[in-house]
Length: 231
Image (tube, rainbow, N blue to C red):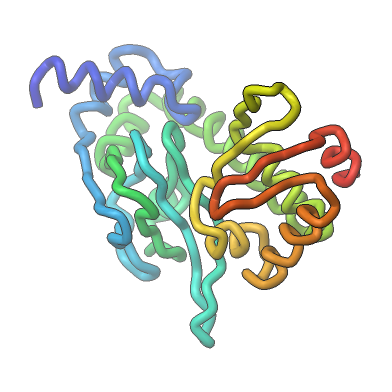
């Protein structure tokens, strides 16, 4: 790995929540145990039961974490986008993966080896505390996520999801536009809805004049009314 490449990886890792409290020399050592992994759309990164060899960070693209029931039904647990990491928990537990990880789009990941992480923990116990802080932030976010999807109605979940997407204001300044980050079926599973229920909610919101849907493109005509429907 060249010096320029190492510094690039180090800079990217340093901006991740899991590593942004680390010193330069710590990031430098971790970068030496990091490699790039390119995934084409649809390619499986790992399957349930595969051994964990480290954690992963998304540079660009999207990775779907999901599980499958005995009947073959898929539940999307999380959609990982750029700047986020995953795979930490099973790495520390030294257990096999309990989910599937699949690229939703062409993606570039950084794979940080378990050996690099464990060697740094052995070298400096303070490093472990910094990682725990990063993992705690991620756990808090996941718990909030589970609470949201467990306690809210289907309509509230859909509206909340739409409002959390990057919004672009229309030229007339009267509406906002967004693009669903992935297919409607994947979004529905992420929200713990059937595809039919998700489509029905989108249709009802469209009939109410709050949104318009064209494929993955969604226009929001009244953000304040949508927020009111959330509460």
